[in-house]
Image 1: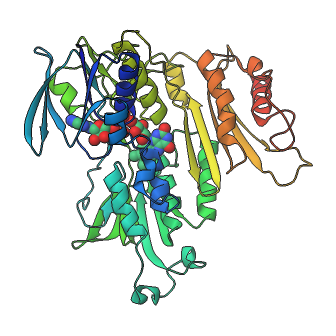
Image 2: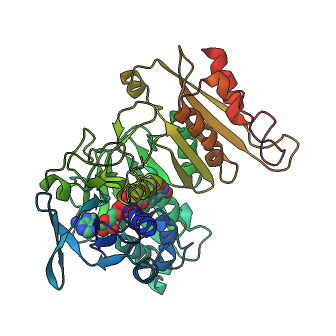
Image 3: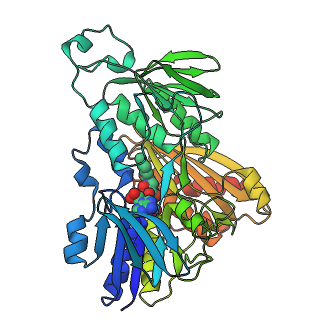
Length: 469
Ligand code: FAD
């Protein structure tokens, strides 16, 4: 009997394990997960912290018992793999019961990514959090959702966020204006805290277009989030507990800080085993997610994948890629070689009452490096027919290669529920297939007054860009 060993029990790892076992029931599938949770949706953590999702268990799509009993996967939680020996094809795992050696025929490294801990003074102070794991989520929920004492409630109003709430909580600092920082601004403010968001660069959501960043920034400010742009955080000051965020421009008093400055692929285990990393710092793989070491695969947040526009390896640590690539490895190991597919860097974010999405390459420098001559246009258009009640504005940015018209990337923003994210799917198609913008402008998109105008904003944007080439 052949043995498939998986290191890491979340999106990539459990997708691979389930698929391999389903396609080849004779395969012995062993999963090592160092934590207690498997197959959890970290993407839901901001909404759990916010209080919209009541229990961490609700974020789990398949429980350990279901994997063991219904899917016949030998799942060992609380087991950290500490060594991979490709010569003898053995992994060593450590648990409370000691060390265990497990032979493999095929191995998947699905160790994910971890929150970056920036080297700023005071990161170890009490009251400083990151949000990378379920236990981080639990700690944060405990903090922001805690009942306030009468004494707390008698504090003078500390800011606009408190105006309509029964509880009035102290200011919270968020370091980092990426999607986690933005989602957490909403989650924390919803619990009655005044939020101060610090972003080193000159805009938030820098993977999105400038126009999208601007729309979300305006909205955050409308929601009373204090956003500090171009402010490098130099330290988190206090005695034992954090009391202030220190920047070059001064100190902002806070009672808690969330640091969301990106993630780094977890590659130590792979590197120690002689598995090569790519230029992005994540594990290099071929189209089948096989590494330089035969029969050793890597998928999900720890691995690279080919970008649909540049053709170069990219590190896009997002959930669908992890699920898709994990599943493909499962099929391959079960006997049907399957490519996991390329990535377009498609992402979505909700910020209070706004939604935004992006796909492809928007950054001109990156597009030029890939041999394109980029140009970008942004339009604002109505989200529904003018005569139809309510509705709002969809802002569409398109980046295209001027000579060929090829759509390189897109970015959209709208009021929440007005379709920026769902509209991005048409752009993902165009970006992935290498479609020219005039062809995009002729896409036969669905239309009815409650959903859009006859010419959907995506089509209008395509016409405008094409006209300016
Ligand atoms: P992970 O989910 O990181 O899982 C890796 C697992 O490996 C972990 O459980 C870890 O404990 C285990 N492990 C690591 N090393 C070892 C070892 N040596 N031995 C045993 N076990 C080990 N993505 C989206 O697409 N959309 C979103 O809206 C979104 N929101 C997010 C919000 C938050 C707060 C976070 C943290 C992430 C979000 N993501 C989102 C990213 C998404 O969660 C990840 O892309 C996805 O979980 C990656 O799955 P993975 O299996 O590659 O890695």
